Image 1 (cartoon, rainbow, N blue to C red):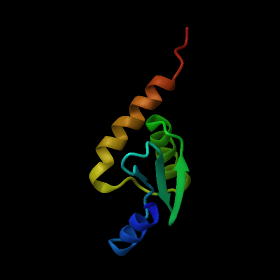
Image 2: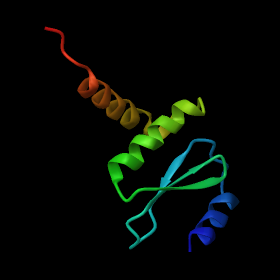
Image 3: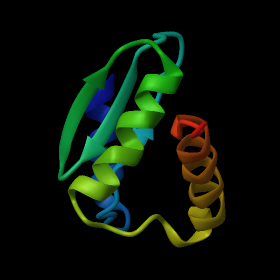
Image 4: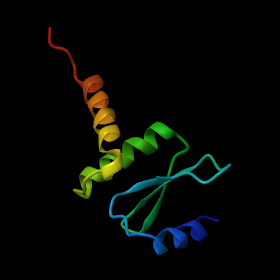
Length: 86
């Protein structure tokens, strides 16, 4: 089932950004990056965190129609990870 979807994705426009794939009824998350399908745990937060990190690892920009969303999420994640000085 996954390979069918991958072949359909390749026929469309070429995406260089990594993106998240969630097949129905499986509960398992996949990330497509550099024409590879990477299986992630069944945790949405971990999958999205890895997706964000792959953008930085591959040095690619966020998809143009999702830039504001990604900027908001990364801003929230950075704010919560900062420790406050006493």
